[in-house]
Image 1 (cartoon, rainbow, N blue to C red):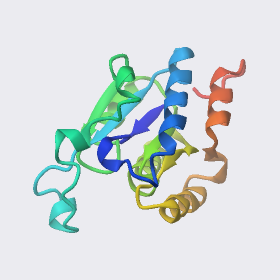
Image 2 (tube, helix red, strand yellow):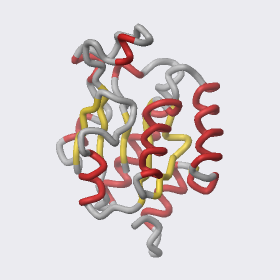
Image 3 (tube, one colour):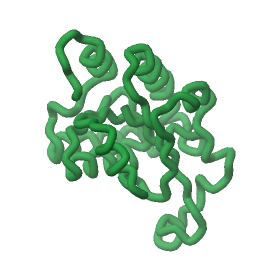
Length: 180
């Protein structure tokens, strides 16, 4: 499972509701002995986000911090990937994931309409089978952005790849091999 950018700077009234679902999934993954990877966005000075769109948030350590509810899980994560782009497939992260032998990646996190969607699309194009746990994702911009991203994901990676957190946990813990 890849936990995308569940950071203080992305938490607001639109996104906070996904955090307990994400925590429950991380705990289920750990209980099953399955790997969890955390991605952490950093908006560096002179980034395209600043130069093109004027967005300068996610610069401070406070904004970049993974939410307190997930902090206890960082120490035993399979990896923590710092990234300066929306997709987790940067700085050789795709190679690290491929070398681990994983074929399926379950995505949860914030923002559905950028970092989660872009990571799932890049996973698809990199030969992984991406899964998006729709109730374990949110967009800080609001429900319309979350829904728009899921609409595009249904079209571009397939509606079967959009699952609930309950389905993801059930598949993980079932006797038949749901993820490889």
